[in-house]
Image (cartoon, rainbow, N blue to C red):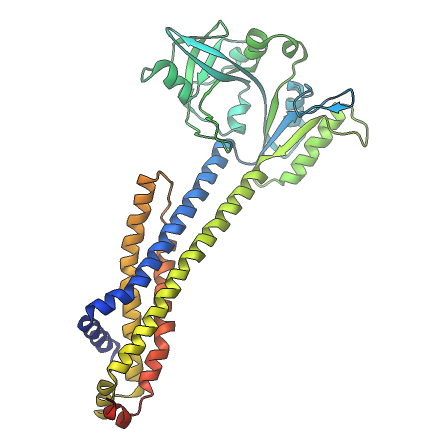
Length: 410
């Protein structure tokens, strides 16, 4: 008997008991759908982490000022201004693994545009900042050399600030006031979204670091050329640990720190933090898929139970087939095909339910979900494997029946 004939017989047998066949497939349907939905949710979470990595900047090392001890009390990081623009330029010049080194000055204030105002944060930066942070200018232009050397009063607006001050109007060419200093808007920044801490990265204004130092912040910042942070982008393929070690050694030499003395700066490898979060998201995806796979296991047990019942009910039919010349392998293939057909039909229906459920969760719960062909193929392949595994024992039992005993069965 050919496999095609076995499939026809299997479909005919399944149509005879439609309700029982449907209830049997229900476990597979729910299992496949659950696997697809869980993997989609996990992949969505992982994709969000990857977006955050891209928004923050790949292969990024952040340098922050160190702490100071006063009266035996150690203050927190950033309590002492220990980093300067010259440190940033030295890192760019002397550390071979570094692609871009960008100093940053930070300030906050009320921004006024016409009759509208908005409280936000502003950063004084250099052109290397855009490369280090993977930040793209969406409209307009960037800073020119004359803006940096002459402390030009020009600014780039993040999406949130532009929308809050100007709504849907084009902000380029408009004049805003930051701490009563007039600035001309020369461009807008591409959207970055939220940071790992949930902060809006688009609620920001960028200006030349010389402008922030001399025209807006002033004070000791202008005299000492200190900066609030330095962002260092390591070249693709370079070893992050080697880059960290070289940067640390260079800064200790520049700051004249004695052997054994603590660093007067803080070095953070943000790629490691983000990599750990990405790994945890990947593990969570696998755990969700494993939990959902239990439903497939339950569905497989249901298939085995129903197939055993089917063998018992059709014992006389099996005996009659054997009496007219059917071999044991024909009976084995017939019942095995029935089990696989149940699993595959349930798997296909589960795909429809899983894809629909993923889109529904993404729409109503506003969770990011990512469907991929691999998870769908995996779920259906698992369903077929379950059909073979749990259908083999009933099929083997049916193929080993003796024709005379089967015909006498009541």
